Image (spheres, one colour):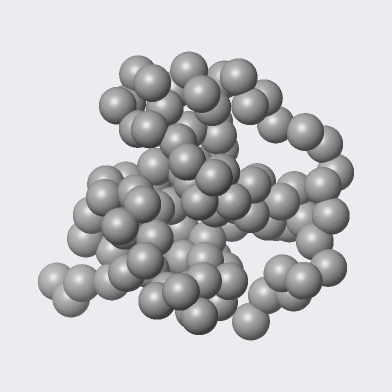
Length: 106
């Protein structure tokens, strides 16, 4: 489990750039969207020296939003995938972020 209670912002991400990318992607941002975006950006900042993978973001989101329904709730906000969408909007590069087979058996 990640320490998501004590995360602090190390630097500010460009909210205008997020708005621009959201508009290009056809995503209408509500306060609920911004809460998740802010959370992932704080998580990214908090773990700046680590090489985070999509599973790390998924686990953090599941923990943070478990009382709201976890990833199911987040998929209602970001139908193309919460991690994929949030990291794209924020300009965060994530290894395997576009790997649709993650978690499947081959």
